[in-house]
Image 1 (cartoon, one colour):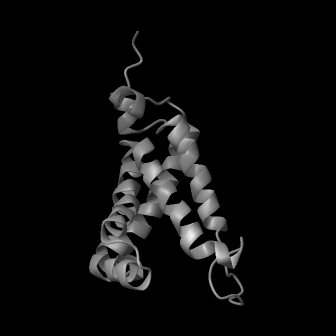
Image 2: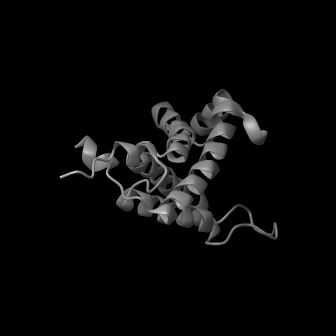
Length: 149
């Protein structure tokens, strides 16, 4: 079972996508977990998720961890399929609970109430590719993948 989760090719294009995806989500996760990059940190984010949004605390905790630890896992390419799955779940919930009501497009002009879900769709598509194909080249998963018969 573990081998099926980490099995991946030596595809360099997937590695580029995985690294970029990981950097973006590690940064977003660092906002929520550590308060970096203008974020509110763990307690502030938990408070927002649980009190203002009504998300149960265990699910709020998982959402923060999926972005932060999932992003870090993607950067090094360790358990990338699991990391991608967690981020896909986060993005689906964000679309349904927050962004669907604002339409597809982001609020570039500042003339709508909130942000659309185009970013989330792109993240889901990237996450699905990693979920199906694995970590690619330059990853811990690749180092652990045994290609011998």
